[in-house]
Image (cartoon, rainbow, N blue to C red; front, side, top):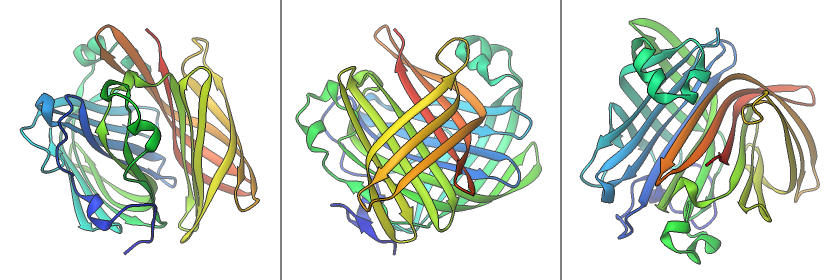
Amino acid sequence: MARIVGDLVPEDDYTHPLGPETNFNESMYFNFFDRDRGIGGFVRLGNRANEGRAEMTVTLYLPDGRVLFSFARAQIDDNDAFDAGGLRFEVLEPTQRLRTTFEGKVLELEDPRAMGDPRKAFAESPRRRISLDLEHEAVGPMYGGRANRSEGELAAEEQFAKAHYEQHMAVRGELRIDGDSQPIRGHGLRDHSWGPRYWQAIHGYEWLTLNFGDDFGAMVSVIRRSPDDERTHGVVVRGDTLDPVTSARVSAEFEENGLYHRSVSASLETRGGESLEIRGEVKGFIPLRNRREGLVTHIGEGMTEWRCGDRVGYGLSEFLRQVK
């Protein structure tokens, strides 16, 4: 069993009782990156059982720049499992080992930026059939909390993730594209949250996940409730040791539209007195969005090659912006 940091219990790896809020969301997310093959991606299920649906996302970055992508609002009747739209998450050993599988068709995006216009991308992109089967094993503690105090003070429509935790993982398994097998060996990060959520509840954020091997990883998030309310969170993970980030400065270079990021820099200070300078180059990018009641949220997803000193790793840089 992996070490737990925070007011969590092993049973939190399973789903939780469905809350009364219309926008109650329980989501689990896994990203993974095989640096030797240049393949990466992430999968997510967000159960919104009170709305009768789950948000299912599969995103796979290929070495030649293509992205395989699927999104569905799959029907669900309860919050008993993460199993919808062909995507399934299974807890093999709480806190330590989990399995993700997907069977189904995905869009093949030669130019992933086509997802800036999802209707056109879904209408014009060819489909591929894929099978994904991955096992994720802990290479660090499970860290987070069951009750975010600042979220609990907000109305349901203003909340984003009342309970939340993350964990760095080693990953191995197989990806099959139209029957062609690709082994996956690498690292990634998982997260799990539950409680009321609207994507429009916050002004913006930068979320960086970094894996340099079994012995070294990091996570940084800079969250803005409003332009004047910025909060920084993060950890540096070295084996079972977790060193909280006390300050972080994150900057980025963007494409001409000022929205799609192509490189990231981060300067970190930790409680233990460590200073880290990190540089990231986006190797694969796809713009996603969420819409509600005329509001549009942009979520830029970048598969990123990270450099910290003489170490090279991979992970995700995710930028959220409210654009309408």
